[in-house]
Length: 388
Ligand SMILES: C[S@@+](CC[C@H](N)C(=O)[O-])C[C@H]1O[C@@H](n2cnc3c(N)ncnc32)[C@H](O)[C@@H]1O
Image 1: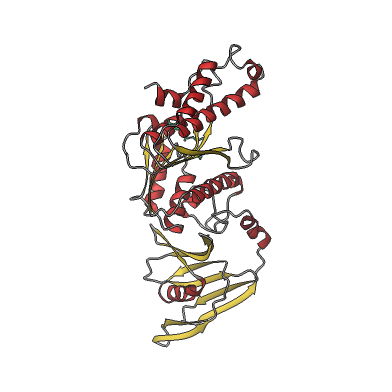
Image 2: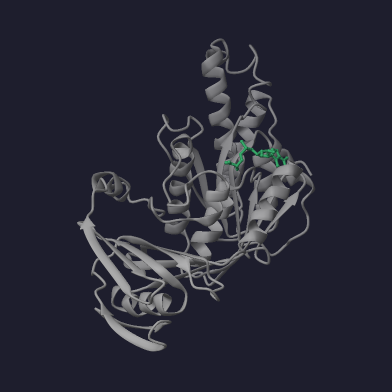
């Protein structure tokens, strides 16, 4: 229950009226902006942050989006304030009912309540999977990028990507501890679904002061990503550059690098950058590991090489094993995780490396050298680190 004060143009003055705001709101929307309101649209979503159950209010002006999280006991006042100052229409969903409120042009507050016909089995479906970004939680940039609708529903064709990003985010979330500020590069960001989600999650949900750079060869994609970043007012903190990872030298103060399916040796250049800059966190999902595959022949590892598919998989695994071990050599606590099911993407291994000490692990280096020598192969990260 809350008291709503509003202008009544017919009775000429400010009046108040009690309105019932339900408990346990799951989601909602605010529309019908008042004449002088800069805020044009609003969304309400239930979210989980550090295990805390919160309600996120997202407000959209013509150009910018603002997000703030509230506890259940705070939300009534926030909603009342928005109805008094910014919006004439409100719709709220609980598990069982949908509540509608409208301030009419005659200054009356009209309300209704109907049974919620939404298939909540469907809505809970994602909760069971414990995604950090639940369906219904609108990430504005993902709407522009065609991954979700403006209601926060994930577009069917993008569901696998949404799943990958969610898992990537979960792994990052589990790995970072009490960070107040983070500078991050997403190397080979492509259409930048991950980059935007990472920014949104760290900045708005985790309240971390983060700066993110997305880098990719594709100038047109970079231009589009910068436009979206600007549209939502993120552009002082989320910037996209066109160019190759090999040539990227601009920043030296980076805490974290991420790569998601950066092709072939692009992953090596990203890992090389991270090692040289002593980045504390590395999250890297490699793909298209062709380099070693092209070097294997009947003289080395013939057992695998005579079967094309085994040669391909063996080379990919060997490439990632060398990368993971090189990171260990440089003092990174390194793990290789299966981050999504093979069905969702066969390129489903994620290298997680966290810098824990500055000593070199010579034993690991000996093992790396031994296999490189025995197979008579070379590998880009190995070359970059050890054959300078
Ligand atoms: C398969 S896409 C993945 C894009 C994005 N990370 C994602 O998961 O949706 C690989 C991206 O890496 C970029 N890329 C490949 N080699 C690169 C390099 N050497 N420097 C910068 N970007 C590179 C490509 O342009 C492409 O956009």
